[in-house]
Amino acid sequence: MLHAMSQAAHDLWTAPATAVVLASASVAPAPASPGATPRAATARPAPAAKGHRRRVLVVEDEQDIADLIRHTLERGGDIEVAVALSGDAALAAATEYPPDLVVLDLNLPVLSGLEVCRILRQRSATATVPIIMLTARTSEGDRVTGLDSGADDYVTKPFSVRELAARVRAALRRGRAGEGPQAATYQGAHLTADFDAVSVQVDGLAVKLTRREFELLRYLVDNSNRVLSRDRLLERVWGYEHFIETRSVDVHVGRLRAKLGTAGHQIETVVGLGYRFVE
Ligand code: CA
Image 1 (cartoon, protein in one colour):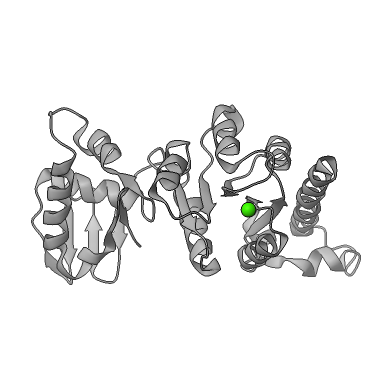
Image 2 (image 1 turned 120 degrees about the vertical axis):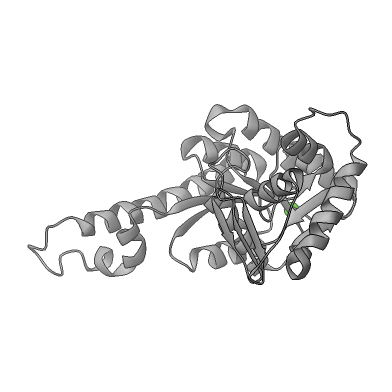
């Protein structure tokens, strides 16, 4: 049974991988025999033009949910999804074809999502791959444990597949949070920030921020849609250079939020966990 699942995961990876090769081949300047590869030429023209698709490994033991996630993510043509129905199948798939992102259900048979997460983090090939955890549990303890185990974000079931897809795309764009290059600018509905120029505007009007508020905003924006704990904010924004209490993070976030006015709501409080900048 377990072997069958691993094999299934393997087949799911290899199928789209083959499609990528075919699509790429159709880009090559060899129009000698039109119609010779009609399937490759017409199957997925968009990803062929882009060169490569991002690989997302969905680890979910409920086939219906896994299929729904796959269908939604693959709709845009720029993502290929492999589904693993168990934790050990996930580890096998991740070893064979390291994914660009993992959507990981917490409640899995045999190996739990937490264990899978920890193992992926220990392996060099997947140490920095973004992991979005799915959890049916609602207790803060489980979510904190998920984030502590190395997950970048979590989505609580029942969830909106469109929201999950948005989180996946955001995570793919920024790569591993906090370790990719910092964004130079941000343009939202109300907020415009040019971090290189140290310029922040809301609805076209300049906002005066203290250096700490500016760094806080920058770190939140750099890690958009990701929950950041107070301790992490302290470490990354304050650098522990001053002995301050985690509570003062709340004070600074409160002031920043007030200064941002109509854009302030983009900084969400995630009760018991920390804060999240929502794009
Ligand atoms: Ca499950």
